[in-house]
Image (cartoon, rainbow, N blue to C red):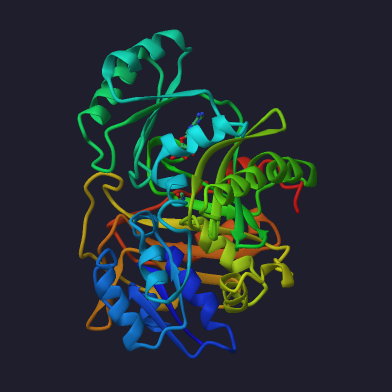
Amino acid sequence: MNFAVIGSGGREHSICYKLKQSKRIKKLVCIPGNAGTKNLAENINIDILNFNEVYKVIKNNNIDIVIVGPEQPLVDGIVDFLNKKKVRVFGPDKFASQLEGSKAFMKELCKKNNIPTANFGVFENFKNAVDFLTKNKMPIVVKADGLAAGKGVTICETIKEAKKKIKEILDGKYKSSKKVVLEEFLKGEELSYFSIVDENSFQFFGSAQDHKNVGEGDTGPNTGGMGAYSPSNLLTDELEDKIKKRIINPTLKVMESLGHPYKGFLYAGLMISKGEPYLIEYNIRMGDPECQVLMMRLKTDLLEIIDCATKGRLNNLKIKWSNDSCVTVVLCAKGYPGNYIKNSEIKNLSTIVQDQSNQIFHAGTYEKDKKVFSNGGRVLNITSLGKNLVEARDKSLENLEKIKWDDGFFRKDIGWKAIKNENNKR
Ligand code: AMP
Ligand code: GLY
């Protein structure tokens, strides 16, 4: 079969890596891809938000199935567009994509259907937002309603700070929406729970945890993700039952009743508080860098899974996972998540042995004259499997030591909380 993967991050590189292992893959195209996907797929450098251009590439390459990696084309309706053109595409339609595209949509849906989530208010005007603030305890979570590349959320310790953030959002700092969502701060531990969904059923698609803060010990500003590990030590059978019963099942039922049955990867960002799950956010796609650790642990043929999912036959499949742990450490360009260095050469990548247990997934990279250069904030994902998280992380860090790049930095402590408690694994 011929596949096209849309996107240019570590997530898309890891998806290409798994598709390429399938005996049934004939042609693989990555739109636009990066220096890593170039070795597995044909990179085609076009604007992924120009759907007519994307369609041309799909037609010219006789693509059977399209996988959409990032959220923006999904939120903009790429699935509706390609479906109309009779292209098989894996992902939610524009309406269902509001689960990620609008926090207000997601929160209202939770409220109406008793899906556990933090108490909240949605505001379009400063005075009403401030009224809500004064009635609630600090800290308070201030969120931009629309897409903000993981940077639209601030946990505010004081009313003064919250007011400043609210004003920024209402003044249009995030172009996707001017609404602000204020939320009660939930205490607990976070867990990312992934599902793969087709029109008839859904299946667990792995657990993971990422580290959003730029600094060690989870300090400093939020990023798109500085590293991730899988599995999460928090997920027990009992907790999983609650997640499915109280959060995933009701959400899928509502989407169906609204005439837009959810199809695609569904990533639930959860807070586990005293053993109870609360939904913090939905993402309508795989996580990045969570996808990288999940693809390393996935034992079932990804092509087969997506083929079944686009035919509504997921319930025929048993998806298998390795019992090993996986860690990915993100190598970033200095300055990220602020202004960062670009076009800087990264050396010695070829000295790292890449095999079933060790992979370097590229993100913000490009190749020129057989040399690799950075062109993004998150640049490489150094990913390793191990018997446990400590072993996996040690291998990633060992591989990182071999890379020569003075303009890069990374966190050495990925998985630190879970490493304290390695026993409760599934
Ligand atoms: P989001 O983009 O909604 O996932 O938020 C980004 C991060 O902010 C989450 O991963 C949490 O660490 C934190 N966060 C968001 N909402 C809450 C909340 N209501 N209570 C506590 N932490 C939160
Ligand atoms: N790593 C967070 C995300 O993909 O949204």
